Image (cartoon, rainbow, N blue to C red; front, top):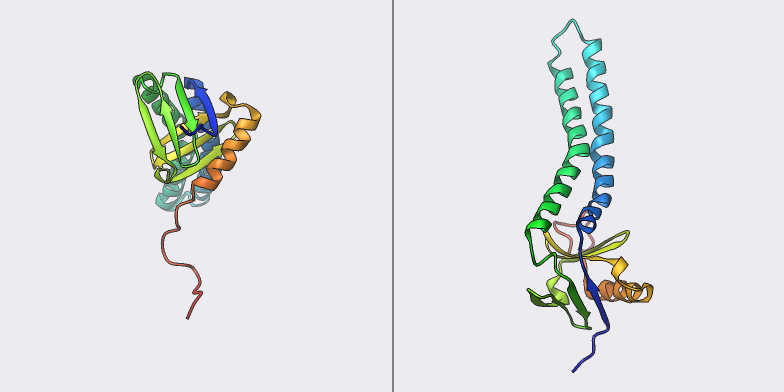
Length: 180
């Protein structure tokens, strides 16, 4: 019998699930909230400057800014709450999970489930401070809080994941022609 390279037990909590969205909230705020504030202010300024004329364009710009502000502030919270709710409704996610990491696959065992996943099954991986997500589908990932691993295990796990899970190929045509 082959011995696993790394072995650890994870007990996910609601804090772990919510913590995965801390990184996402920074992106939403950067790409939606700040531009939304700038666009809304520009729309209000245009409205004030063109007050005697028809203010349709200015109101449209202000509404677009307001929608971006909404997305930058409330959407992350909505996603976080939905994920925590799904976690609460899923009894298998709340069990202690025993991970055994091998060269060619990974096994996840709990009292309710047993899964053996080849490294090729993962689309990609994402690491944010304190967590590694092994992405199986665009909306499904194995979330592994690094607090359950020793520092040496976490380092070995990161290296193994980077060497086994290849990023997906880029889509579309190349921007510049490279051949004849």
